[in-house]
Length: 124
Picture 1 (cartoon, rainbow, N blue to C red):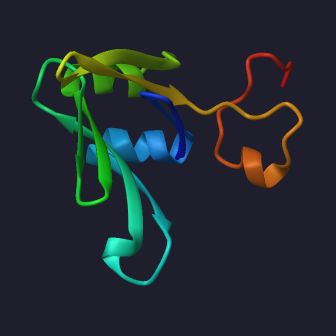
Picture 2: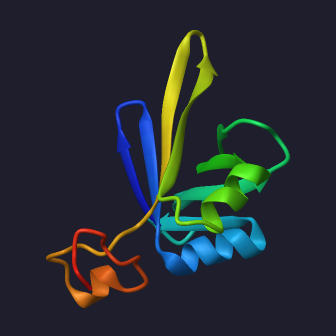
């Protein structure tokens, strides 16, 4: 999973195996380890839930985006590239969330492109 944060927005880009795991298990997580202890880790997670709208939480060094079941199924089982929304974080503030399938980089190397979706801009 690739994670991009810009201001008060966050974007997750998932490759095919991650989208498949999300569809089958209902959760996928990426971890950055800055040290050996759990407190030294920063985790990003995408998880399905029974709610009706996107939600986000940050607890114990983990940012979790909660995706309604229907939206998750529509995204994983179709050609739909992604989905987005804004979530109220309190005190009149919002965070923009974008989740997308990750396409192969046109000029990327094999390692960067492993597991990515074919890029619609190429004639592969």
